[in-house]
Image 1: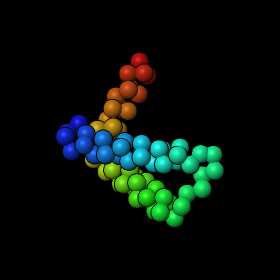
Image 2: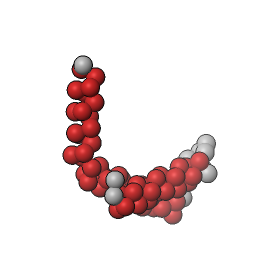
Image 3: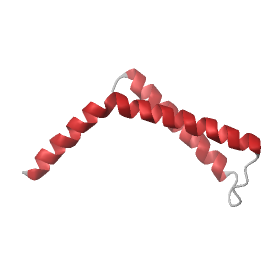
Image 4: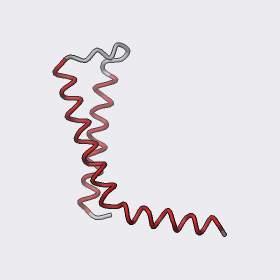
Length: 75
């Protein structure tokens, strides 16, 4: 993976950790304020955008790896 993909992956993970912490802080009621809901939306969108970009940038490589493993397992 190149540096851009690694940085994007770190950013996506960071955003998911922030979402998780926001959610944990509100257990068990999950009653988020309007401000917290907007923050949750922003963090989720950031994570989804980064994850989508990571997948799209590496889809061909991922597919080749899957095919390679299928061939190895078929033997």
